[in-house]
Image (cartoon, rainbow, N blue to C red; front, side):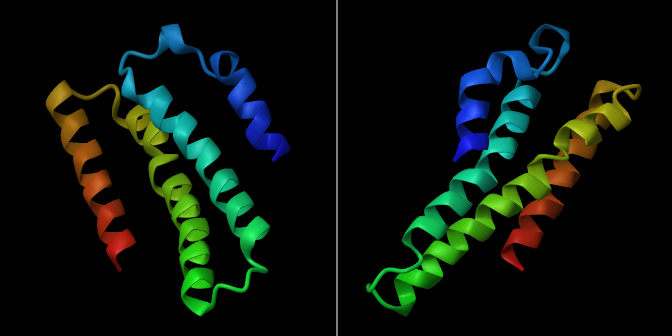
Amino acid sequence: GVPMLYIFLMWKELLPWSEINLPILPWTHLISTVSPWVGSTIYHLFMNHRAGEHCYKSLLHLDMFGIWITQSFGALTTVYASVSCLSVSWIWRTIGIYCVVSLICLYK
């Protein structure tokens, strides 16, 4: 919980908000940073329940979903930085393809 608390308290200082041209990127990065901590904290706090296997699997899926968010959308800033020298249409195509592939991986 300490890393999660730190991120929630210091979110304005963690990123150069004024230097980023695409306003969704810092928010995506912030959500990607905190999501595995939230999912893992909830999972580990409640994994010793007596509600049955279905509840346990739901908690485990929540933990894995937080990790998926980090792995998929945490890299979105890197993808954007890699193609930022291209035209706007190519930037959006690349980001769109990356997001679609990430969603397909979640489905699988």
